Length: 273
Ligand code: GTP
Ligand code: MG
Image 1 (tube, rainbow, N blue to C red):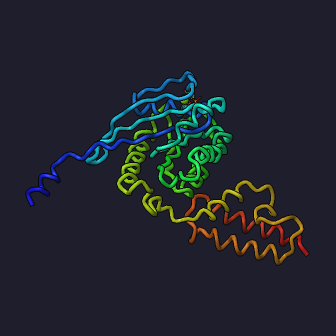
Image 2: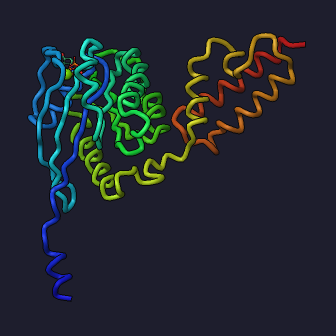
Image 3: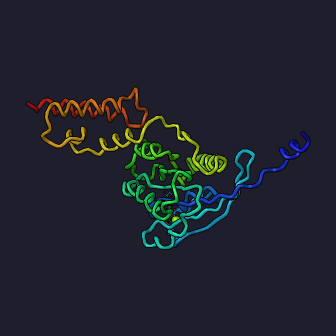
């Protein structure tokens, strides 16, 4: 009894974790880290050369954590330097600039680069990924909206935060949640807790919404080739309408996608024999 009371009073060992930043050049990775660690913002672009390294201590609930941050250069030129640093990572800050579609579309290739370097034994299931939709301050024209970014992140079980390193918006909250999730992961034996994202929609639903958003015409919306029959139109519509009905699908953008399905079906059936 006494022994267990003494054990309980012992301070828990500090947790050591490794965090890396990923994302295209100039999206604001270094500025996000600087805003959090030094509470300041530098408007001038100083490209990271290879890797910047820093250590910081944070307190999450009753746990002290020592965070080793490896801030990676986004430029393709530095691939050879970066690829050494993917292993033994518990947290990834995956950053894009909401004013740059290219930087958003590059997120998949960043994950692919990490997977490639981790090899067949490695897995992203043992990593907490926080997607930062950065530069949400009014200074820049926004081309990737919140629902699109959130959908991409949450359908993969990642955290999603809207941030501005310039104004500080979202930075504190994002890091706090990110580190909490890393502590949970470590206490769960290095695996992301099952159902941790709790988003309530599937990857299939998220992919269908993304595809519909990017469609060029009504055929595309229903995933059909031009010239498909009335029956094929009706069948494709039914399948997608069941998948994306807003009562059944809480994914961001499901209502617009569902409306687009109805309009596409009506437009096609009007012109089909
Ligand atoms: P690399 O090191 O080359 O991979 O770039 P990076 O992703 O580290 O970008 P960095 O943090 O150096 O920022 C790039 C530019 O974007 C700089 O000019 C920053 O001042 C600017 N910037 C970063 N974050 C924000 C933001 O939230 N809002 C605005 N308006 N500008 C930002
Ligand atoms: Mg940088």
